[in-house]
Image (cartoon, rainbow, N blue to C red; front, top):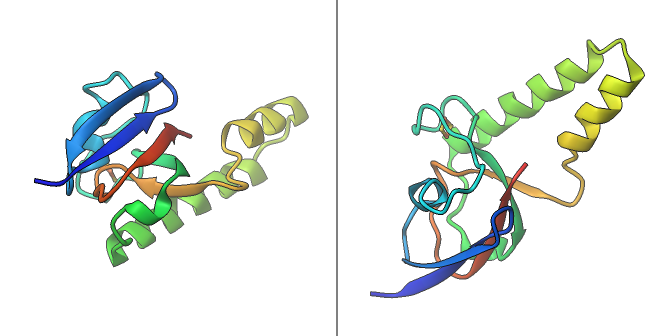
Length: 119
Ligand code: FES
């Protein structure tokens, strides 16, 4: 069976997994701070950043795209409702999507070497 290496940047852990493994299947085992809830692609809580190797991940499904869109709309809505500059800047730093490719850990399968991180 083909294998791939996954590096979780937040905990400096690299593991070798069978091709086809989902990110969420191993993120908890290595202690990564990638959160999750439904495990079905509906809640958007498992959003993570792909730091390297995005081409080695499964294609986004229609469900994943819709859930990510809803997640980002909610984040932007939260920014719009913020009335305190310090809080707004902290939110922007925390959720800075610039240069990041975001995916859902419960939906994303690994097909080759990749580096990931929580948002
Ligand atoms: S855990 Fe809910 S969308 Fe992934």
